[in-house]
Length: 275
Image (cartoon, rainbow, N blue to C red; front, side, top):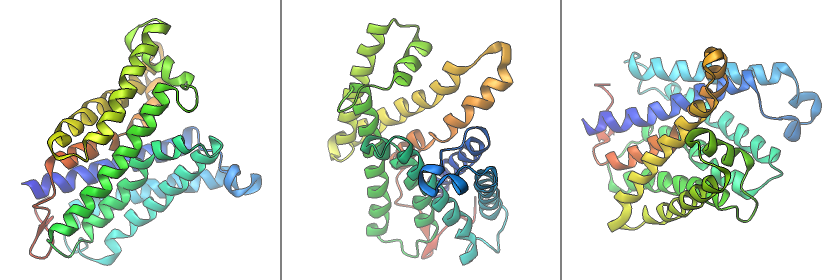
């Protein structure tokens, strides 16, 4: 049962991230011109190709690991995960360039960047050794810690001022005034930093992951919640739901770590025969 739960959590995190990133390519793509030059980067064909490739990779992965019994253990079965991982890395790098190579912007996206590679590592495991499981757990913990450190420092307004979007998000979700919203962000920022440390300490690991699970879920839901307009429900969901989907790793990776990976393999290979 634990095998099924763990792999499905990684798959779900990957699929939500991939489809969310694809939707963003169609709605408001990153400024690829910052990386590839104006001619290529600002081409509608370029962004369309990335979006369609992500959709194909997501669908391919879903059907391969849920219905393609003969293809599950083939090398080609990991190809869509690999391609999606490279495209997600490209998107992360472009977002980083958009923010003038701010280190906080880079580490904030660590959980998104690592999700495809965690799934790829889990699917290609050929050993049931504890070292293999610890490597997956360790990579997930580091990515989550970096993400929450980025969030925490943004919320605290150090070393750069708190983004106005953070403050508006809190105010729209809670109805708080400006000063109260800032205080809430300060508390959340401190808790984010504490959680990033706590997940590396055995006695506090579970508490840190539970905090990340709850707070990651709430901040993911906050995007469509704050931006929802009942007068234009479809349009507002179309605009903000993808932003929630790409943040799914923020709560699914803590859940993955809480579930554990001890039973993720069977018979020398990853056991997904009952998925």
